[in-house]
Image (cartoon, rainbow, N blue to C red; front, side, top):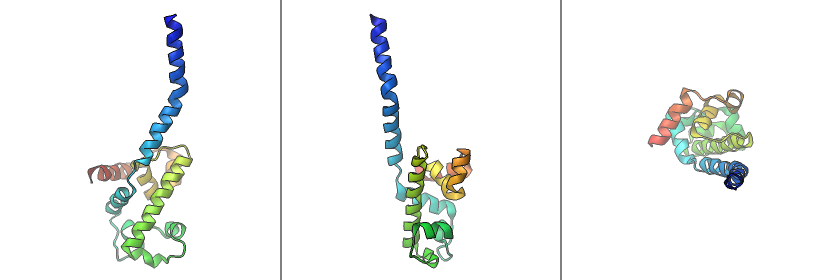
Length: 139
């Protein structure tokens, strides 16, 4: 009788664990503080606000995708550049999730620097992602 009870409990655990695990993973990715990550990436990139791409070194392609209608020369404007960086991070979070990958600061930072495809192909983050995550955690 105890064996049957144990099997029933084990069955519930096995049936519910994917749901519970998925919910916990979703909550963790919702906890990414986008403005904080934007600031960490600004520190990592170290770009000049006087140059196109701004302090985040936003590429022309990203600028066109995330800020249609804005000129790339607008990337010298810190407010606009921060907005585009924020949009790109939100897009990366969405794309990682759509590919069944839990977005983390390390994964997002790697994708920011080397492109989303770089992470999707290798599923590895390098030193850049780890350093950015350290900055994010220490701010």
